[in-house]
Image 1 (cartoon, protein in one colour):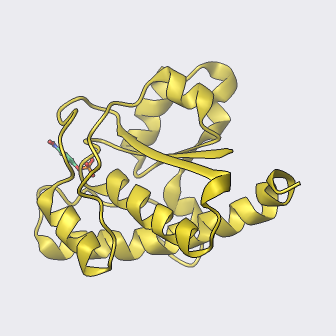
Image 2 (tube, helix red, strand yellow; image 1 turned 135 degrees about the vertical axis):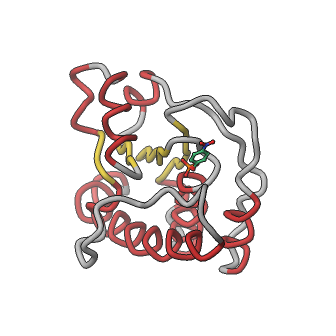
Length: 162
Ligand code: 4NP
């Protein structure tokens, strides 16, 4: 299995959205048996909480259900176990590096690196803004999810299918 973890601050807005979008794409491409997908937060504020209702609604408008997801905090073991540990912004990236075993640090990347057609390198935190922020986050995440799957196909899936 190729293991992908999406990480933000609270694990109730951006990273569960990315988990839902990426799983939806992987299912559409019939690749779910090759990929394990999860999300976590660098802080514990929303452990066991469902995604923010605005994130749920924005996903639902695009046919993606994330209501069943629950918040959890990212751990050093996550960074050991996952192949891709994808931070939504630079603060999440630095927080992950701070807890990462030295030999696993290279797995931690900014998720928006996988959307080279966009200039933004960070998915902005939508928590304190309005509804439109959640749609903007979804547009960015959809682009990066597409690029991530292309990267995985190119670099890993040819081996995983053997
Ligand atoms: P997320 O958004 O990191 O995308 O889940 C946030 C959720 C909660 C808070 C901040 C950001 N908070 O401060 O509680």
